Length: 419
Image (cartoon, rainbow, N blue to C red; front, side, top):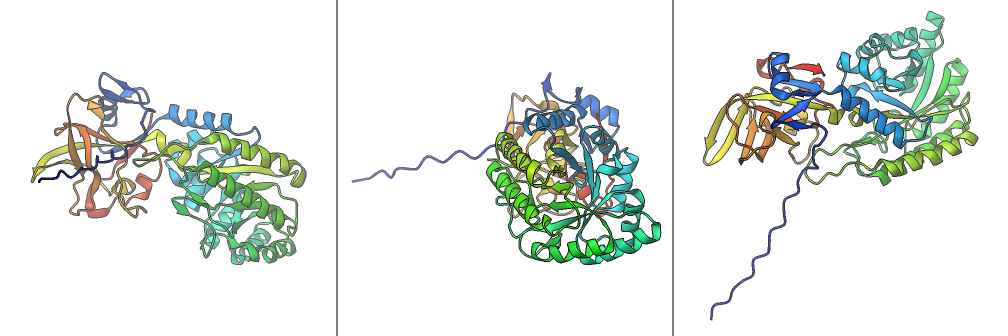
């Protein structure tokens, strides 16, 4: 007797969250209101990054509507330091956070308010600290060495050295893509060492303003972000007892994530807004002079940008379709999976001039580099594409061009536009 074995129904593969920020007209993606082919013609060459002004402004407005009034929003420009974009963001947010003297120069040129510029980073050179004091920006000190250097610089320049202490907390941001605090870290000063540093700041007469805590980044779990904010606030409140002056600046970090990969869901802002409202109410009594600051980079700009490359060849190898483009990991290291992914996952990708295709196929998108790491999309369902078509990678407004090895193998650099 023959028995039939039941075959389990395969579970559907996870899909990307819908990418609805860019509309489609006549089958073409619109970036800044322009059809992708027209934008490519205006830019004059591929590959390029394009950032949408309207989406940047909308994201800031949505965040302000979700968070209580009085919470300051700072743009961490390491996410995207394009000068035109930084200038645009400077007019939307309350402050800019920089991580080098080079970024400081861009922020100042962009018209950022000096009083609301802060400078973080674990290895600030003496020359950079001198520039920061001369500019009058807030320095997030990350070691006793920086405190001593700043005291000498302030005396030499006869200017106040504005400082906040970046604290390495004794907890991590659960569920974050990249942990920036908790345990041994190069960032900040361990929480148990902060009181001694605060005492030294007081002795040296530096202009103490507050604390900077940043537990982690790229988190899509509102409850984890709320927990980290509460713990950061409590830690700052305890440390404030040893501070040489009242806390005026309390940077609770950011960590707000955006959906990149299949299965990711957008962050729910409502619980975060409610949590910040409760902390703000406490601060009115417990730290009455303090402004609460949220520092965000990726969340502001990531979804407002795309990377565009042109298909230069279509190849079929043992039944697998390869779309070879003029762009690759040397322009977009993150999308290739080589910027922190443990297991490579696809970013959302579309054929921009065939955004509503009648016919699809499973394709792999690669770049022109002589390495198998040059992979932009691995076996994704895309429109049937030919040479000349435009591959568009969504979620590319953060950690794109500036985070990529553009000189690798001597291919041309890509350009950027703000539309």
